[in-house]
Image 1 (cartoon, rainbow, N blue to C red):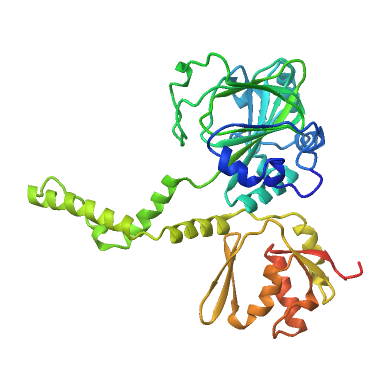
Image 2: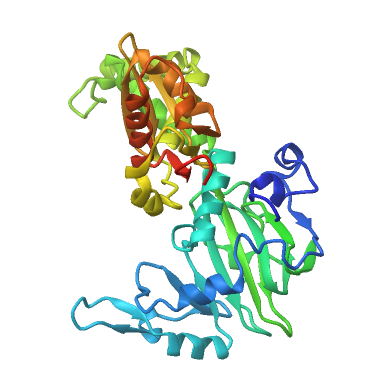
Length: 403
């Protein structure tokens, strides 16, 4: 990707609307790029090399996973315990020893640990409006890490280095949730429905529930497994519980053994009725807006260059050029007196007359401090943008326009 990566580019040449209408939750999609460097600005070998040079990587908490032919190693086999903290730290000598022995290394949660992937996943979340998780799989030649399995979430495989053969079979359970099918080993796999050798730059979308396995031949392989975590229908029902709490009828206790038959019958009839009333009168749009608001306020902060901004913030002047962070998501609430800007699990409150000035900050991709509208004076403009920089909403492009 030569420009800022996003999901639209991931599924190109397919349109993002075609992907979600024709493939999402329905069937696999394979995209052959013939472009070895396509994912370089998302992840390359240097990023992994730099990451593994860290001498304080914790082996606990499922951060790392070593597996071969479905058999995983206890982290104590490839880590060392520090005498003071008693934490288990990755022992790189042992780690590479097991890689040479054919074990696959899984680095979990790299959407929180490798800078380029942090920014990439942040951008995807802002575009798709749901959670993204990324794991890295590093497999030696002629090796297999995991045995045939399916995932409870949709996955995009991004092939970064080397090649890997993927076999896709069938879906024994339609759209599984968090409950694993304990009998997956009993399902007949027979001949794969689809077989492909992924090469650098290729993409393979695997909908949840589709059994798959992967293995290398004569080359090693690195791929990113991009987990997609939208809100599911059944999760909306959880919000109905909160709505039910507002109705006194739902706050009554259910029948117990000391109640008579008439009381129990009354409960059954009335419970069905008030449930039907709750659903009949449900404002689905409001329910969806609530979910969207929850996602916005809980979204991880995008911290690229925040430290550099901290160093420069005292030099902000009217000629400074600022920009809204690309991955920022926010919502706005108003009342008669104030405007409330919600993002990063916090709320900034401003008097209602700040609306024209806030409009410049909220809706301009890039602007000079002096161009902020409204009635506030120059000193007020600098104070206003300083607050938004401190909170991580804005970033500094240049201190002076001619920088």
